[in-house]
Amino acid sequence: MIRGRFLTLEGIEGAGKSTSLEFIQQLLRSAAIPHLVTREPGGTVLGEALREIMLRADRTNICADSELLMMFAARAQHLAERIRPALDEGMWVVCDRFTDATYAYQGGGRGIPDERIGILENWVQGALRPDLTLLFDIPVDQGLARAGRRSVPDRFEREKREFFERVRRHYLVAAAREPGRIRVIDGAHTPGQVQDAIRAILQEFLP
Ligand code: Z5A
Image (cartoon, rainbow, N blue to C red; front, side, top):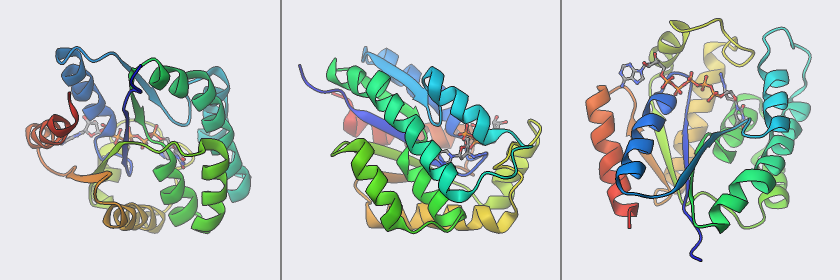
């Protein structure tokens, strides 16, 4: 059995990940590729419970290290229960956020050194890394305006603008370091232009 491919979507709030996820599913369905769509933090009962703890706006006393460890606890469970079994069965896995988000938010946003995150990444994931990451990039003001239009802000969305500037910068530095895996899509473009960009990139990956 050929291992499935592992795709992840990244970007700051409001960049268009969730919107694009539906389009990617359509592309995979029309190419008859069996796939699993999931998200982080979440994807399992434990992961969703940890997500609820981490996103609740009134949980203001979670320290950065606890947040980091909860992200990786959720990820370990997600990998064991859903991601690895699906890949081993030959399914493609499309995940809304993964470890690049940890580097961007807990690293760039909260200031935890990359080296420390790397230790947990190697521990929890072994050699597993996404085959392709679509990074939806958008200016912070525009992303926050889109996200703000939608719902009551969660614990992350309550952060200051500078936090998201650091997150965005961290993502872009990662993309510059790994241009083969992390492909940047301009999330400020129209939905049609964003879909064209996704289709063009995925065509290189589709069998
Ligand atoms: N987090 C972390 O800190 N560390 C980690 O390791 C991981 C996660 C894995 C939850 O993520 C939080 O977890 C997240 C980081 C942290 N921080 N926050 N908040 P999430 O992915 O569930 O939540 P999110 O980033 O807030 O998702 P989002 O705001 O839904 O963003 P999005 O999915 O990129 O946006 P969207 O829902 O597709 O679009 C937002 C709105 O814009 C919507 O009304 C769309 O209709 C509209 N939109 C989308 N595209 C367009 C275009 N092209 N033009 C015009 N309007 C558009």
